[in-house]
Structure formats: C-alpha cells, structure tokens
Length: 125
Image (cartoon, rainbow, N blue to C red; front, side):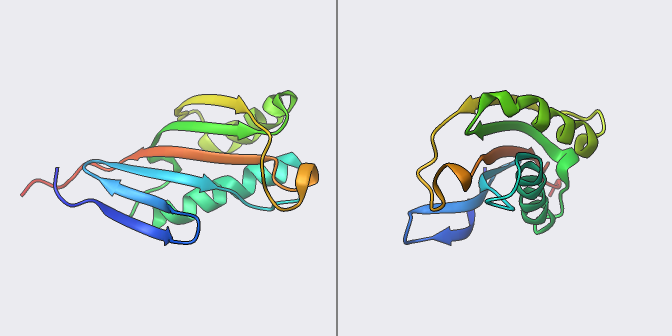
C-alpha cells in the first residue's frame, strides 16, 4: 500500500482534512460559505473539496463516493441541482444524512458538510 500521507492536520480538533492511502484520497469536513443559503453552502463545500483534490492532481471527476450531511433533509433537491451542474453526469456514489451540527452559528450557520473518497491510481514503478 505504501505510505499514508495526512494533509491539513488539525491537532486541536484531532482530524486530518484529507488523507492519501494507496489509490484513494479520503476527504473530510468539506464546507464553505457557512451562514449562506444551502445552495451556496453546497457550492462552497464542493469548492473546498476541489481545492484539496487539486493539491494531489485530481478533480471532482475523480470522486467515487460522497457522504453528505445536511441540517435539513428537505434541502436534498437543492443539493442535487448543484451536483448536476458540478458533476456533469459523472456522479459519485452517495449517501445523504440529516444531522444537527454542533457548530458556531447554530441553526443558521453550518447547513452542509461533505466527506468523500477519490480514486488516484498509483503510477507503475
């Protein structure tokens, strides 16, 4: 499998923003535009994910699995509209979960968090 590489390590809250392990990149806590409308937060979370993927030479088209956490499950159609625009038919497998976020800003703050897995085949030696 090779070396495991941890990026954006947050010692205070005990997590890594993303981790390279073998042929996969594991992305956690992708958020953006906190406090804005749900559509803007989905866009911001995907922008955050895209930015991290760029650091390892990947794009959203390399994402194979997403876990989406929403404050309100009735926002799923809004999320799907953004996904159609951003993934252009190359959709990852996904799971959507409703949760109460314990985050600064309360109910009007964080409404969307996306975690994901991307595929990055290793080059042959």
